[in-house]
Image 1: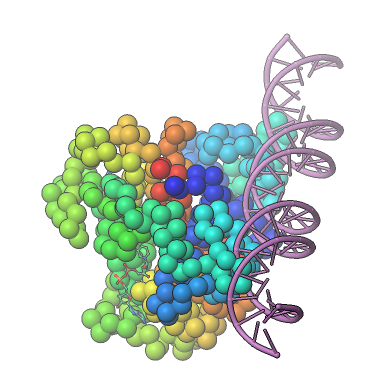
Image 2: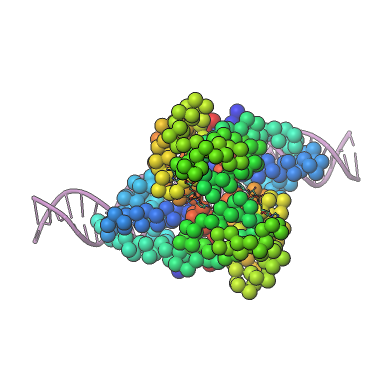
Length: 206
Length: 206
DNA sequence: CTTTAATTGATATTTTATTATCTATTTACA
DNA sequence: TGTAAATAGATAATAAAATATCAATTAAAG
Ligand SMILES: NC(=O)c1ccc[n+]([C@@H]2O[C@H](COP(=O)([O-])OP(=O)(O)OC[C@H]3O[C@@H](n4cnc5c(N)ncnc54)[C@H](O)[C@@H]3O)[C@@H](O)[C@H]2O)c1
Ligand SMILES: NC(=O)c1ccc[n+]([C@@H]2O[C@H](COP(=O)([O-])OP(=O)(O)OC[C@H]3O[C@@H](n4cnc5c(N)ncnc54)[C@H](O)[C@@H]3O)[C@@H](O)[C@H]2O)c1
């Protein structure tokens, strides 16, 4: 099953390996080595090997890893086989862009419903997803056993939405707002903080 | 000036401190301690102190850091005073969402022009930004001395766009596609890889 | 005026992540 | 059949990041 004690940096590299495996498969390759993968992704082979080891893949000396097996192992580890259902809150520009993104369904995430407070949006469909009023979230999440929530509301509402998600039993929050969220220990928050990324970029080019 | 040898993790925390400082300022506080900041962001005080030290801030024992001075230091370090001009390529769902985001201008980034290959988009304005044909990018970038590029095209075009950006003299690329880009050493790429984030989230909630 | 508590800043330690080294295995080929 | 080359896997070393310790400083309380 999914190895809970893989490091975050290693976990973040797995989708890159997966893409690489798919590409090599399409090129007709049956086996691939860490060196192959590493040279494509500009990673040292030893790092690729350690990550694949942690993911549970095994290879053969002189040959490398079997493409089909590697695909299966990574798919399993990444949860691409059975997508996780998620709610998204805030159907503005970013919320709509994420909802439109069909690729997520092949990468373990299925956005099943959206929530907003704007009467202009409630009841409408965006890319096939219905927008519900915010006050329906807790009840629906519990009935549908939703464990993942995405926050794309204005910053000032973010903590309120997080509180509602926690109340609803959600255990993983994908936070696109620039605010730090306070949640209980058993809830995992991943901050997609664009401002953090910008500060690195700006620093590096100046 | 901007400390080029700050670590990436530390740099990424600076915008959080900045937000915190602004919030405390609005509460009327004149001085703030690492402990204050840390408790708001769930960081240990020593980490906040080390980061602020690297950013060039100095505080006074028993009192903490002066709010106004901290704001100035962070603003300078983050480049919030003089926004960096950037081009964005790919005016689809995500490209439009980013272009619509006014907050960037206060956080060091000014998107000055957009590029696309679709005849339906070229010549139009989105949120006040004109869309140009892709073949105008190199010339315009050189004339306007553009150093930052944002890629929000489909994955299959990403490397081509990166090559064009490199040719145009762009030194920092914000890559929203899931592909690894090959660029020369003097070009910095920051990958906003949503699939990587998903793999951590899915792993942690299962 | 003295003591106390809080805080910074510098240094040291620990932990985590990355990279290197070494050994055993396997394939390809002479 | 034997040998060389490439590679996985295990272990060790290094580097980077986070955390702890301690001394110096300073404001406030007694
Ligand atoms: N657009 C971007 O590219 C971008 C970039 C970086 C960060 N962000 C962050 O993402 C968030 C959303 O950005 P956006 O550009 O989509 O904003 P937006 O204003 O376009 O959309 C916000 C949406 O949230 C809804 N909303 C407001 N309050 C709500 C509440 N309490 N509950 C539920 N819904 C509520 C609004 O009705 C609206 O539909 C913001 O926090 C922003 O800082 C966006
Ligand atoms: N939408 C999301 O929320 C989301 C999430 C994760 C990743 N991404 C990634 O971001 C990228 C863009 O996603 P999107 O949803 O906005 O896609 P989209 O299809 O909505 O938009 C792509 C845009 O790029 C333009 N384009 C195509 N080829 C081009 C080229 N060679 N040069 C210039 N422009 C070109 C298209 O005309 C279109 O306007 C994709 O790589 C996607 O994987 C998007």
